[in-house]
Each structure stands twice: as C-alpha cells, then as structure tokens.
Length: 233
Image (cartoon, rainbow, N blue to C red; front, side):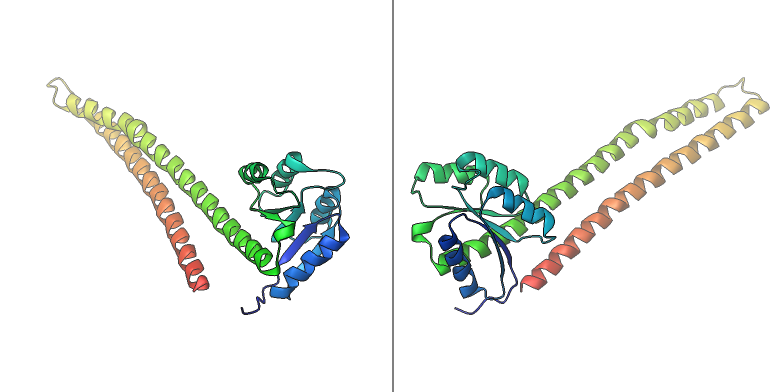
C-alpha cells in the first residue's frame, strides 16, 4: 500500500502510555507526516484543543480515562467536538455498548486487542472523509432552508403586497366608467392608477431581485460541488 503523505492532525486521549505510544506508531506507519498529540485525561484533551490553536482532523478517545469514562464521556466528547470525528477505543468487547456508542455519535468503535496499523489508518481516513461529506450535507441543507425562506417571502409578497395596489387599480378603472365622473376626478383617478402601477413595478422588481439571489446562491453551490469533484479526481 502506498504511503499517505497527508499531514493529519490527530489527538490521542489515552492514559496508558504504552497504548498511546503504540497508537502513534500505528498512525505513523501509514501516514508518516501526521502530527500526533497525546494527552492522558479528558480535561487535558479539552484544554489541548482550546490552547494549541490547531484544528484536529480526528480524535482517538479511550473510553476509560481517569477523569471520565463510558457513556457520559462519549456524550460530552461528541458534544464538545461536534465538527471533529471521534473514534472510540476500548479494551472491552461489549457489542451492545459499541452499538450504543455509535448511536451517541462516535465515528467508529475500535477494540484495542484487535487494533492494527492498517485498521486504525482506515478508520482515521474513513472518519475524516465521512465528516467532510457530513459537513457539506449540513451546509447544503442550511442553504436549501435559506432559499425556502426566501421563496416563502416571495409567495407572501405576491399574495399580499401585489394584491393591494392591483385592487386599487381595478377599483379606479371602474370609476372611469361612471358617467358622473368629472374631469377633475378623472385626473385624480389617473394619478392614483399611475402611483399604484409604480408600486406594483417596485414590488415586481424586488421579487425579481430575490429570485436572482436564489439563482446566484444555487450557482455558487454547483460551482463549489464541481470544484470538489475535480479535486477528488
């Protein structure tokens, strides 16, 4: 297998120094340019993310730490590091707990006794790529929701704002056909018709601009997607 030259930033939270050293060796075996930071407690891991100024690509988390363990540790970790994939490491072969861990949000669940350089490398790479796609999907959903909000606003404008001046025009036109309408009344009516027409024109221009914003936003999304595909290829 070819060597991975990516400079991954990996945070290992493991209180057993022997296990921590072995994990680092496994990582560097397939990704020799990776940067591995090791701490022994959850609090140290939390502080490392705050003070180092480094955005880690993945976090390897032992589930039996001196200051936290088990389900509560997982819950706190995935809440704290929402945008970073967390891979759980444990020495206990508890199938039900592994399922529970995955449902709580960890990216992968690895048994230390079955760990190898290749299995760890694959888990790290898959977790990072999965996180990227998930983030892209979240951004896409947010964009769609924003566009839907604009479309709802446009619909409201069409059903309410346009109706008022249009109703006035219809009423004013009806007045023109009344026999008793004087010349002075006629000039006034035509003035109101013109003002209402200009109001409708302004509303339509506003609607067109908002519609254009949606098209521009969609175009930017497509361009970004094309760029990402090209990068992948």
